[in-house]
Image (cartoon, rainbow, N blue to C red; front, side):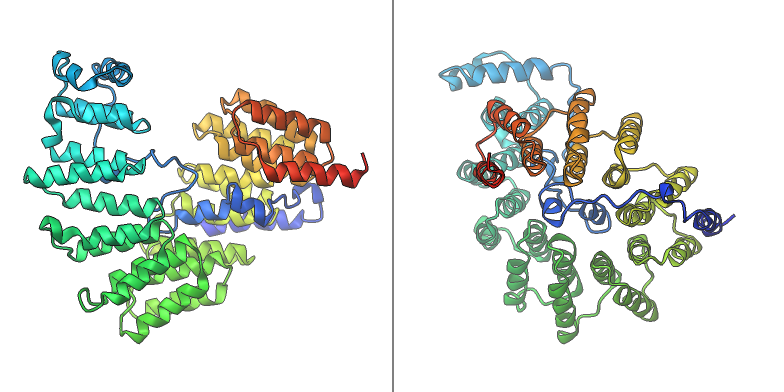
Length: 496
């Protein structure tokens, strides 16, 4: 039986029970301001619709650069790491390195640098081991670690040494471009690109695209677009460059106005949009709930002979469900199957998320059940959608499901739940959840404390809020002027 027919049967049955209010849990959302600070569900979902991007919820040290491979199970690694950390605190270090007798090959050195990526000084000791600074791979990795810690001067010293040793510095320069962009220094990223010829490197189209991508990835889309247009004589305007800019406006900054402007600019410069171009724009419109323009572009691209990919279908499923066109969303899923594509977790999340946002948790549960029947595993975004909309018992249920599936819950999960209950003026449930965090091995962060203090004050639980604030400070979090001001305002307003 086709997916849409099975689901239509379920929803027909539900519609006959629609008068029973207990079937549907009222919408429990997080305010717009809270979404920006904590875990924006639609943002997390739409990241899966776009080109790979770095989530700001993740540590800047989490992803290895340029697909490095590390053997973190090397039996010699723990001893080597211990030795490096101990050596880091000794003096003079340089004399100990050659006389230590410790044998470390290149792979062990790389693994040590990666394992110590959050502590650049002992990582740098590993780099200097047995002259591995003459190895391009080791140099590139060390440059990434140093630049991630904003030790750009030291990183440039390694690049100059590489140049003198006739090692290729191309990868190293691209790393520096990416790290400068990550540090919100687009001017230095552009300067590094322009500096490539000093190292006998040609700033070619690939490097040009790498620069544009790095700038856009970290939010400097305006600078990337300006650089593209200023250099159009050296790097003629073409579809791929515009697609990078489109991705920046559509999926990084999520500015539909600018995305429309760039789309018009493409026409002005006689640049023909391709499947990727349409994918970015349809994704952008779907996030805005703009059903008309999403479908208009979908029809337009098909008329031009472009074949939609799964990302486009997922965007259409989302916007149709969001605009309460569930029947049409189910038809899109059947359509993508007819095209030889297979629905993925994002496809089903595209329905679950808007249903949860609309308070239609029973319908979302049906989609989840169908998702599992189709042998598609739920993702953390799937569960986060339910966490935002569930009542207390439902929250406990989905926390248990997450743990059972190995998908957390993580710190973001509890940010969603705490914000939800405090917004609903349910401080008792928020305190229960706070206690439950320990059972899931989640250590409260400063953000968790902040949301608890602010929420408890809003609920006029001043004594409990003060207890949490004192605990927050004692655990090493900085004093928050905003919370101090909030305390004063609420207490004065209460006349106590």
